Length: 450
Image (spheres, one colour):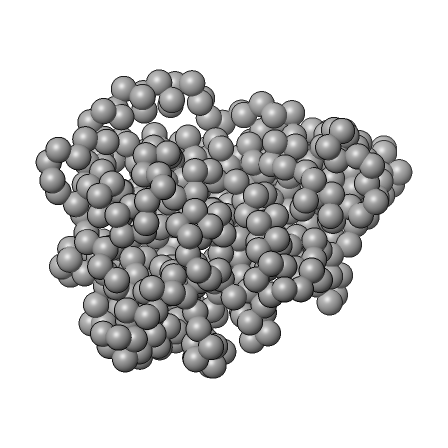
């Protein structure tokens, strides 16, 4: 440990750590030394007591966790929160969401992204993977507010070749932006809206430029059944034959993944991961959820996600963590799966891996970027603590996050947001809503037909 002043010293906290077997553990009465945006060391509070630092945080009674990662969302869709309620998937898309999205302006996207980032920072999310339109605006918001993000410009085959080209240009232009906090992906929407020729071309571009792919796939069982009936193959098999599975790919949802898909995914030549957003599946009454256990058994990380707030109503990854654990217990009929420690592993290291940042974030350890959240467990709903992991997953909630740090910079301190002015965003978004939600034009950006 160097004797020169640290940039940030967090003392007196309990730190979530991973051992060599990647099991979750906790170090009590610890201190985290941060320099140049990186964790320099995790030591004892006593050892750090006299350590000089430009900034100190007294975190007694708090737990330091790696910042949560929202592995699949559409941040600007917070502008549509609560607009399309109690509808089946097809009507949700065709009657409300896709007509409204035909009205979206870049300013709407920017304001939605700003509100979403505020919500995520307050909920302990330090990084999010976004898949949407007008993504230059989202990248600008990320750069300004201090979060980390994995961004892709979504496209449909109905846009012609320029949709795919725009997605590639965005990915190349913003890769490594915001002093490295922004990574990028190619973002074809889904196998049912992007044809095989476009998927194959995307796979070629991904290999040529060293870019990952972020795509919705086998979102629900209906999509799998329809694909089998029409084409004789599952959506996962479409991704194999078009070469997408030869790239590093993040598959959103996967609740329609079936038994025959598992060997295909296991044989994938790229780094494959799945993002699960369980609240939306419950809301749409989908009959199946992401097969986390089956994916675990073939070595595929499952990251936690919220999807957009139009389907999920919130960007609360903390809730996704608890729901994933509960739904896995229910669907497998086994109360021992997922455990709270497993849920925390999904929320940290597995989520970091899912977005291609497994070597950069996801744990609090020397050399990792200092993406850290401090959680206050002194409230009555989190006391007493018999099992700290269970307290974090099943008793604590996102509002217990006191402080959020990305790259060593404090974005929220004691619940006060430091990088986003929420009232001004809400006021301007409110003025723009009537034009945004108008569906009298009869247009929609796409048709949902699976």
